[in-house]
Length: 171
Image (cartoon, rainbow, N blue to C red; front, side, top):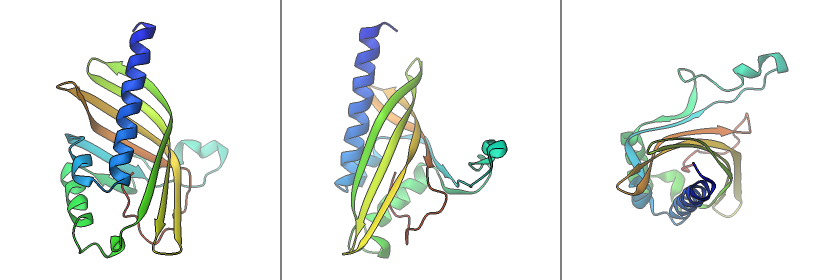
């Protein structure tokens, strides 16, 4: 890929990720759901504290424990719950700010793009509950009819212990 094309692709990918973050922060979950491919895999493995010689075991494997291991139907149900009055953990709703930075395109294969980005999700809940989740995401995007769709999102938190009272936010 020539430099001009690479710069344009980087810009398009970053703008897509920033728009997605804004949709989540504005609680426009239905519009966010429209960004997901039918074959989405949304996964956040647990992280363990391990010694240097066992770093390969730091994150649970794909068949191990995970905070999230969702497909599109699971995510649709989460969105429906967030938009209803039955989500006690989100009534009143949290205030979030999604930060996405250090976006690196790792691979381009036809209409598919693999990328990695640093993330920080800040959540303010009620009057005194603050949560900060920091880590990285590995996303795979597919261009369909000129627009990106997310078909894979793997989230790797930096923390090993999640101190939040609930995990109702979307990463």
